[in-house]
Image (cartoon, rainbow, N blue to C red; front, side):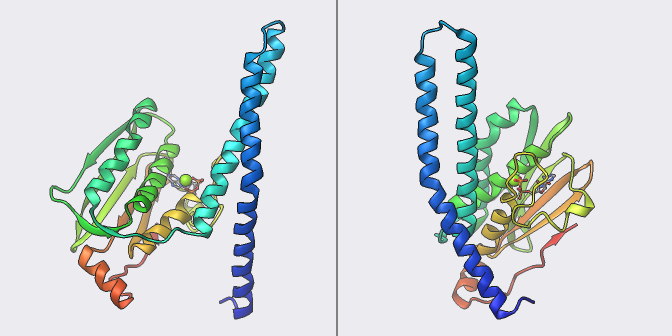
Length: 255
Ligand SMILES: Nc1ncnc2c1ncn2[C@@H]1O[C@H](COP(=O)(O)OP(=O)(O)O)[C@@H](O)[C@H]1O
Ligand SMILES: [Mg+2]
C-alpha cells in the first residue's frame, strides 16, 4: 500500500502531467495549422521541379500526421486524467451498441472484417452517459480491429441480460493476448502496438467503473479475445448512486 505522502505525490504528479499536456496543446495546434498551410502552399507551386515538389509535399504531409497523432494522444491522456463528469440518462444498451456499430461498419467491411450481431430482443434499459459508453465500446472495437491479422476476420457482438443486469460482449478471433501481458493491459501506457497509446483500456475501465459496471476479458493467444461489460440495471444503478453502496459490484477478471 502506498503511504499517504506517496499517494499525495502521485496525485500531484498526475495534476502536473495533465497541466503539461494541456499546455502542449496550443503550440501543437499552431504546428498543425502551419503544416496544413505549408502543404497547401506547396501544392500551389508550379511543377517546374516535380520530384522536389513531391518530396517536400510528402514531408509536410508526414508532419501533419505526426501533429495529428500527438494531438490524439494528448486528448486521450487528458480524457483519462480529467474525466468528464457523468451525465447519466435512461437509455437502452441495444441502441447504444447499434449506434456505435453503425459508426464502425464501413471501416470493418473495408478491412474485410465480418461483423455479426445478436442483440437482446427487448430493449435493455440502463442509466448511462451515452457518449462515454459509446467511447468505451469504440475503444474495444478498435482494439478488436487492430488484433486482426489473418482471414477470416470475425467480430461478434452480443447483448443480453445476466441475472437482471444488461451486458455487452465483444468477441474477436484476432491474435489474442499472451499470458504474460494479461496482468498489464489495464496499465496506463501499456501497449504492444507500434502506434498504440496504451490509453484505450484504462479509459474503458474508468468509464465502466463510473457506470457501476465490470469489465472482464478472456483471451486465448492465437485464437481471439472476448471482452464483456456487465452493467447495473437502471434500478440498481439508481440505488447505487443514492446509497453509494458497493452492492452488486462483481469481481473484475482477466484470464
Ligand atoms: N482485442 C484484443 N486482442 C488482442 N490484444 C488486445 C486486445 N485488446 C487489447 N489488447 C492488448 O492490450 C494492449 C493495450 O490496449 P489499449 O489500452 O487499448 O492500448 P492500445 O490499443 O493503444 O495499444 C494492446 O496494445 C494489446 O496488446
Ligand atoms: Mg486501444
